[in-house]
Amino acid sequence: MRLDKFISSCTGLTRSQATKVIRQGRVGVNGEPCKQGATQLKADATITLDDEPLALSGPRYLVLHKPAGYVCSSDDPEHPTVMMLLDEPALESLNPVGRLDLDTTGLLLITDDGQWLHRITSPKHHVAKTYRVWLADPIPADAAAQFAEGVLLRGEKDPTLPAELEVIAEREALLTIHEGRYHQVKRMFAALGNKVVRLHREKIGDFQLPEDLSEGDYRLLTEQEKYQLQTVQK
Image (tube, rainbow, N blue to C red; front, side):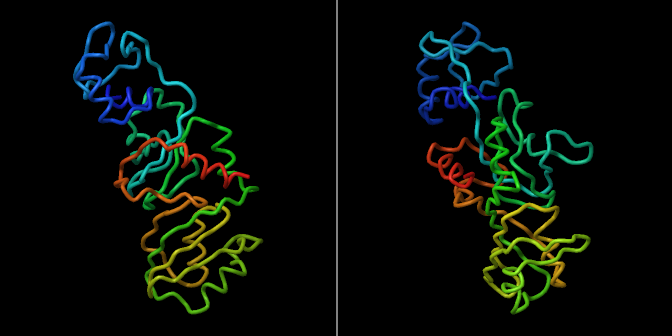
């Protein structure tokens, strides 16, 4: 983890403020002053600010703009994982909140708070998730009505919960679902005889993927954003 990011995470300072105190010589690494914010820290490094020791404390809540080509796992023998995109200490304690397919992009939450993770992913809470979907064929005129009634997926006995479909263009739509079955969005459109060619998650509850977060980047959630997500867990 970079020194400037560590200082920011421990103190609540912005990255630019952290860079400033580092350049002022107020930060020490293993007992020696360090003025380079880009310094990579080892796991056992001792960091001080104004001679006071610093340490990451409390659970972490991250938002990542997931790119295609990464799996939502801590380890995979065939593909890179989203954990490789994180510059965080104690990486082994962090877990993705739910999963996005290898080729799906968009909003992904990551945390080391197991209870918080469970409340968002638990099927009994029916947390809404909104996806932008691009399709191979035009969307049928009655697709929204079919999704609102529930769709029977191939190989399953019970139809999906009612979902909301907002048609944006002939082959583009926003779909909000309230459960998380295996490949659900793709299978719902397959049940209508269509094929998803691109899938991007935009929202969880009322929390939207930050517009200023570039693909592959991540940051800590703000207190307001954590509150937004806590409201969907009730």
